[in-house]
Image 1 (cartoon, helix red, strand yellow):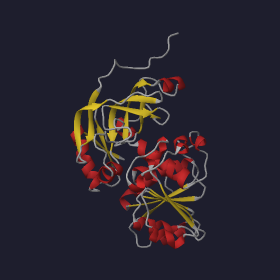
Image 2 (cartoon, rainbow, N blue to C red):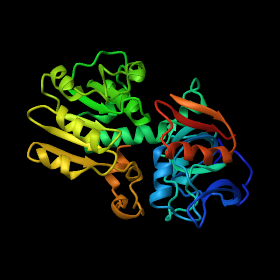
Image 3 (cartoon, one colour):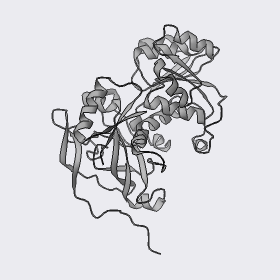
Image 4 (cartoon, rainbow, N blue to C red):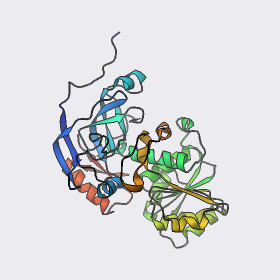
Length: 354
């Protein structure tokens, strides 16, 4: 019996169309960007859709890396597998997958998602069910990775990750409360889903117009994040026993909200951005704060500027409603400007590029 094919397509050109970072820190469409090298542990994916995240604008402004391919979230079809990835048998040529890569990476310039072809860690991609659209699949990578690291690594919500795959999503959770600030964000909705699967009661803050969204994803209760008495209302609802707060917005105001909502015994707080120590120092004896960078999930060094830089964290690798836009690569660049201007709420921009 002949071995399975390692490629679906003939040998590729060395160049492709992609969105790259210019010398002056802007984004531009390049028709001569390099196709990423197929390393032994990688899957080469023909991109069908890409999604935008706040980090696409943030890192372009804070730590641009000229001559690199931008983008993090993608979905597409596996067209080639490295030797190690092929031997493991998790993926096959032709599989529909989604995931996240480290875009704008000076250590791997061809590694971004905003390209015709993406090389992703085969162990970290998600296989896309037949009934899921490319648009929906493209929103999964960053949201799921951040939620997993935030909840089960940084926040230390006790659960066995391996058991989540067999969990029943329609079961009513009865475990401890976990506050998710920004419950209508891409990461917030995935966090709520994971918490429900793990048996925890997710309580979400978001705009009242997104209460229904948060509840559809599994939130036990929702609160207006702009409400004057939201923290007090959460303390009353949780009988002053809330011990976990996951801040998917991560401003000084939301940090304060989390600290005010945590119960009398304190607990843990995790943000997606560096937090204000002027807030966290007020309960330093009872609340343990941390913040995370989802890019550590690859277990490799993160070569960004300042406090966003990270040494390799191999253990993180082990933890392993979008607005659909029919558009071009130029439209993706316009979308980054939309994200930067914070013109979006309760949606995630997805671009069909294939």
